[in-house]
Image (spheres, rainbow, N blue to C red):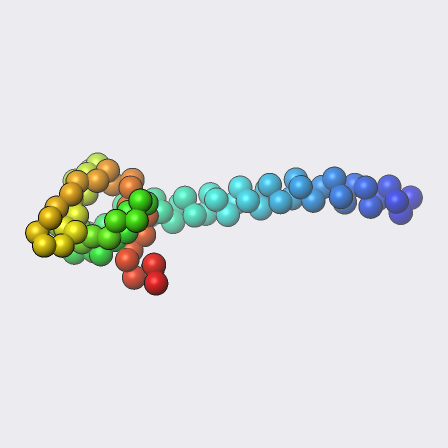
Length: 88
C-alpha cells in the first residue's frame, strides 16, 4: 500500500503546483488593478515596457506621462505596471 500512496503523491504534485501558480497570479493581477485604479497626478510610475515617467494627466483609459525634458507620452492605463519606488 505504501508504494500506491507514493504514486498518488507524485501525481498530485504537478496539480498542486498549478493551483499555487494560479492563486499567486490572481493575487498579482488584483494588486496591479488596484494600483491602476488608484493612480493620481504626480505619481512616479513604470510602464510594463519599462518606461519611467511622472503622471501629469489622467482619464478613464489614458495616462499621460512626463518622461523628462517636457516630453509627454500617452499610455493606456493598463500599461502601468508599478510605482517607480517599488522597482529598486
